[in-house]
Length: 236
Image (cartoon, rainbow, N blue to C red; front, top):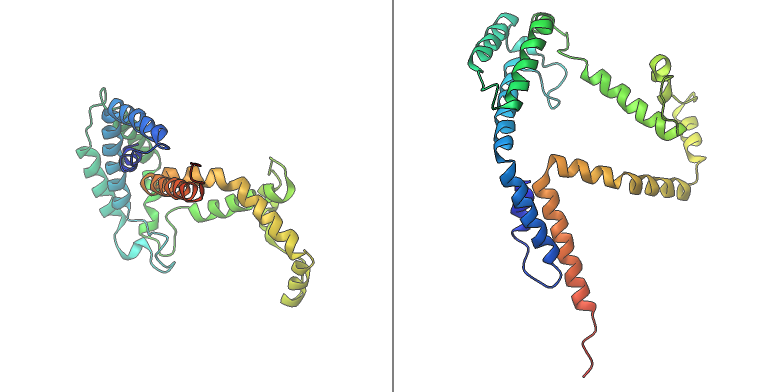
């Protein structure tokens, strides 16, 4: 919200912008009312990043050959995690976000911490199954688009078969794909993009509020300039 307020502050005063200035006043009021909560969330996020740094999981930009076993041992991670837990002592009554993180962190590490440490000592053992879950998530989304059904129960047993084609060669596969007329394919892709546009905007606004709102304001300014340039002058 602070990023939205920052962008709205740059909107010039004009006949077409009263709504945006009224929106800025509303945003400023929300920011002032929730500043304490926002600071609490920011501090909780800082500690969450410290936890992630302690685990030293490889990022998606790293090749598969780079594993955590080349960086740190399980004993070192366990000791550093214990040090972080002792250092993290938030006000549990006045800081609800940090209190929630504190409770979830303590419970999760106590229940699953020892099982998470094996990946630091066993070469080739991934630290999590996020890539596998991501694959099945993509399969479920594609299945919903293809079939139009909300349920994807069949993917639990036959998910890997949903991405296969019956073809013995690349030429045969290409022939199957070319059976779909290009205009029909482009029309369906356009309709799909239009249907997904609101969800994409919300994701962009969540991930990069400053850039997204600035882009919307620029589009609004360009639209105003175009309307002003094409309007006819008043007759004498």
